[in-house]
Image 1 (tube, rainbow, N blue to C red):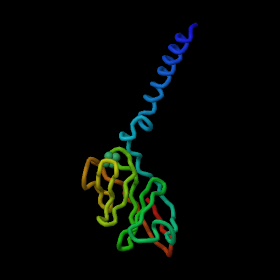
Image 2 (image 1 turned 180 degrees about the horizontal axis):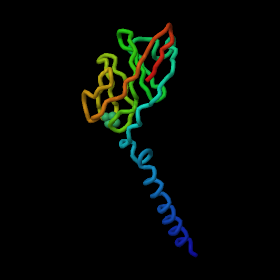
Image 3 (image 1 turned 120 degrees about the vertical axis):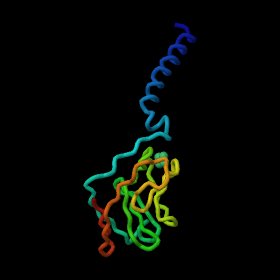
Image 4 (image 1 turned 180 degrees about the vertical axis):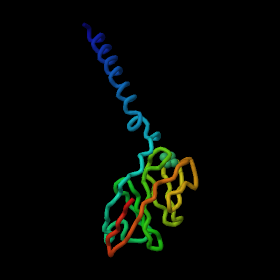
Length: 140
Ligand code: FES
């Protein structure tokens, strides 16, 4: 086998290996723009310490267990499923508008998770919150 023949065969082989890997990874690595919504968490039951971190101040939010937990500018707490119902990007809490906004294509959801602007067409799941001292209970 000549050197030219060797590289010709190796190059062709690599292309054959790489193409299926990319096709198999379409949902994640080959196309970051087209995901799928993650189903809203069920049987939710956890507690967060709000004395430190993002929830210690009004307007802060975090994602825990697939749920966005937010503290409004008036000190109330909200919890909705994090995965945008359009293509699955985690939504952010927008304290100024007291709503949730998807950074991917701009879908908006009310403070209770109801779609107010597409392209999403389904609501986020809302969860209950109950504050006792510095412990915030989030549950279905
Ligand atoms: S993923 Fe498209 S608007 Fe959220």
